Image (tube, rainbow, N blue to C red; front, side, top):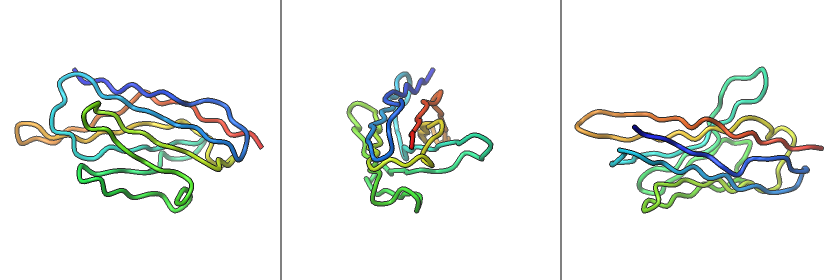
Length: 119
């Protein structure tokens, strides 16, 4: 059983910062990519940032220069540092982890954490 536990969401004023964390636990061994997605009300879930096992990262254009993704492999944790937040960053943020075991690919999702940016 694999669980992803997210934390760090909340309410912040525009221009403020938040740091999200997502820790994986359970029988998860070979973690490949770890990432963050978000879903705003009435919109589809979209990629925010993703980091590979080799520490290469990619970001949505809308967050480049403001958000930074990082990971701690020993703790099986991925972080998202969000600076200069804007009201349009509001949404539910989900952690996604891709892993591989016994020749098979697996995908896990967190339960989501709410981020609200007030203007």
